[in-house]
Image 1 (cartoon, one colour):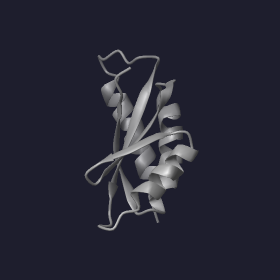
Image 2: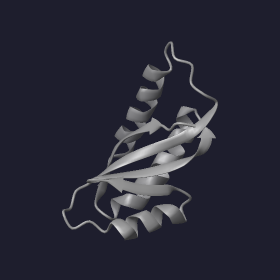
Image 3: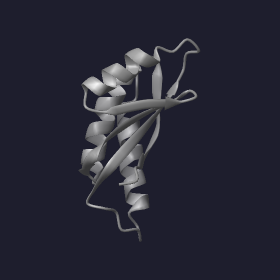
Image 4: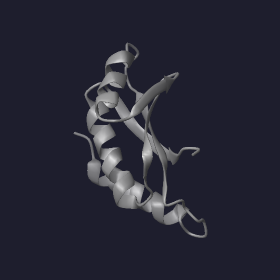
Length: 104
């Protein structure tokens, strides 16, 4: 069972830490990162599932990238999309590994 409560807390904590002394944009693209747990990964299927949810999907090595935006840059909006992406990829044996703001 995935621990969404802990994941959400990490996102909010990251937001609180990053926003101290740093001016965040009002909107930006956000890239969520997920790690493949299986060697025989179904890249096409997981990327298609993310695209169906509105994400741009790609991968580098065993890292899956799910890009959305531009979206509002606040903890609740970033978490909202993180939760959607996480729900989508867990069934394909991918697990959250963080997020970052894209270059807009």
